[in-house]
Length: 234
Image (cartoon, rainbow, N blue to C red; front, side, top):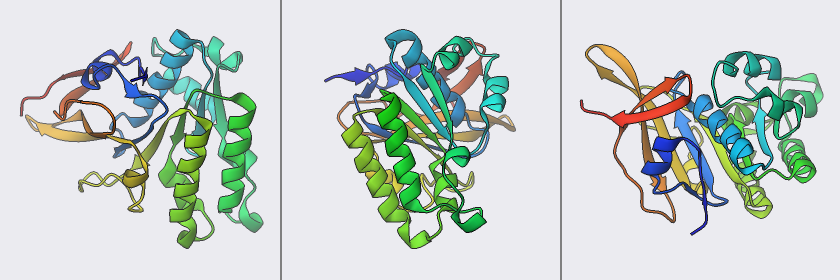
């Protein structure tokens, strides 16, 4: 099996060598659980080690803010951004608002993805977050169709993709619309656990089609060189 390394050493061990190539992965978790850091290390790891283009589609942060937040990490390389090897796409700057409202037409969002993927031909992408995008669509009845159409597009474009899902910290949920976990090939769940009256970040690979993987829950630590996983004894 061909694999796409995340270049998060401990996570690749959990995944028995990396993600199955060209899979769509749901990275689910509550605020502050490390979702975006994991995704950014995945993007920069690929651009640095494979020399292939990586793309971040975001509705949450502007490029300047992302750079400020992540330049402290060893995996972040601003030269890759300037060389368009890691491309940041602010969806708000490309997709017009629906009649001046803070909403988008689903077809326009899909067209934006298609055009940007066709232009840069990335081998790995991140969407941060699919939750925010769906909440901005003009018609909630179109969300299921939008998600299925997006997953089919990513399959056709043959890129390894992570879509970030923001979930309630008090519920063991992976999505907000009941579709995301079914269209995705894998689920990586990030959460917080209470240890000695302190909240600690944790990671668990809940599902990963096409590969044997550990289902153990790990303590997640974010250091200067990125993410580390440790045995979680609670």
